[in-house]
Image (cartoon, rainbow, N blue to C red; front, side, top):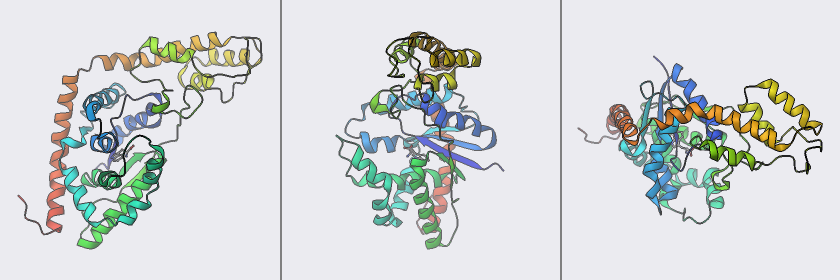
Amino acid sequence: MKKSVLSGMRPTGRLHLGHLLGALENWVELQEKYDCFFMVADWHALMSEYEKPSDIRQNSLEIVKDWIACGIDPDKSVVFVQSMVSEHLELAMVFSILTPLGWLERCTTYKEQMREIKGRMLATYGFLGYPVLQAADIALYGAHYVPVGVDQLPHLELAREIIRKFHKLYKKNIFEEPDPMLTKVSKLVGLDNRKMSKSYGNFIALSDSPYDVKRKVYSMYTDPKRVSADVPGTVDGNPVFIYHDLFNPNKKEVESLKERYRTGKVGDVEVKKKLTTALNDFLDPIRQKRDGLTDEYIHGVLVKGADKACAIAKETMSKVKECLHQIYR
Ligand code: TRP
């Protein structure tokens, strides 16, 4: 039997090239070897967006379009929305009963977010329990592996602790202890040479139009020393060349641009023009696939996904209720 993998993303906006390199490409490959569950974590998004939830539905549809356009196959993997499978909340409740407050208060991600996210009231009961719900997401499907970035490791460790405590209390091992599957760190630099972030607006979205891509590339940060095309420039660590290396398949062109850049024989405009072409060639098939996906089609995918997820989630909850000596259907 294949081992299973579960991962999720919060539907807080369009996905960008950083998501593709950091997570999505990895997900697409995992589909071949594992039973994969890819979840839209809309409850998790609501924990920070609850004051203005109006974008959650469309964002959920759009994120699934991005996934499918990049190669996630809903016939191979279970693609679903967390809130469409109510067992997530049920198991989260059970886990919350046995999770000591100290484990949550100690959680570094919690403390960080409280400090960093401004303008939102996050000192809520729900937000403190963020990792408890995440533990439920994973345990519900007996996921063996959870592909995540390093930032999520504390949540994974907490999930393991909660699961161990459940097993110890009720003397029955009904869950898998999940292992993180660290995504090869591909922290794609932002267009302005800062960390790529939604709030900085310094990214190229998978759904950006060719014109948006051009506009964004032409405004990219390059070597600030180069006040004119004849000044020798720095290639290493220069975002324009980082992107060329990643997205321009014409290696000869890239090498020649680098050489001419170093010796002050090419203008930024030519470098950016070629990068625009390369990025648009890279994004075209994704855009094409994406454009063919209607909201209705995605909704259908998610209903089917929820059916598949529900069947497994219900079985798990029966086992949980058995352990808890509850009456159940
Ligand atoms: N917390 C994750 C994030 O912000 C999203 C998430 C929710 C998740 N549930 C999950 C990731 C379960 C992996 C497994 O990125």
